[in-house]
Image (cartoon, rainbow, N blue to C red; front, side, top):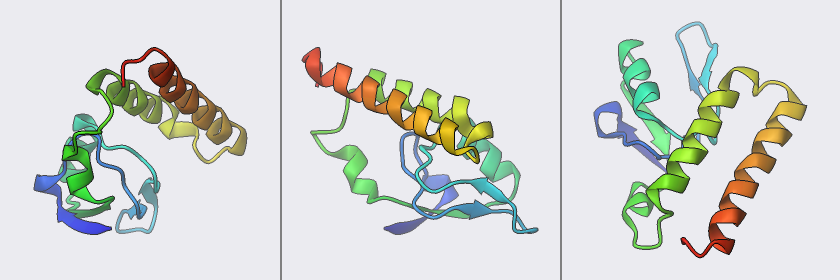
Length: 109
């Protein structure tokens, strides 16, 4: 885990501590993959730092292909408004698992 400056945040980094606004409302849940739009939004809200998984992990040679990473980020974004519902959280996890497994079986990764 590492707290990084929001200016150093990159698309695909995974949030490992939920991000709250000044009123204590959750802006992003733990496990959310950052997108360019989310980073831009956090900056506009005055968020200066985020806790992410090991940032060097994103630069490793065994990182998933950008197409799959983008698909997973899009899934995170599309489910972001319904993540408080357990069934939707399960559905999102199943879709993400399907995408990851399909990628492995297709020999892309």
